Length: 79
Image (cartoon, rainbow, N blue to C red; front, side, top):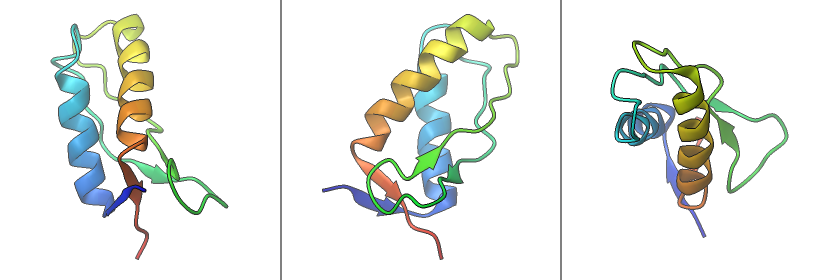
């Protein structure tokens, strides 16, 4: 069972989790987006990331890790 979060709440969680990853301190998640036709669980994605001074290889790895971890805990509640 996952907890429902609004888009703003989930974006903030994803942004904080991404910045906590090694080499991603300057990266930023501007928003998360709902996946079409997904009802529960990982019904959201991180479509874009602002790199800042972070290397794309660090950010790629981190985004996958963050999405996998947070997707097990939270689902996006679309109002």
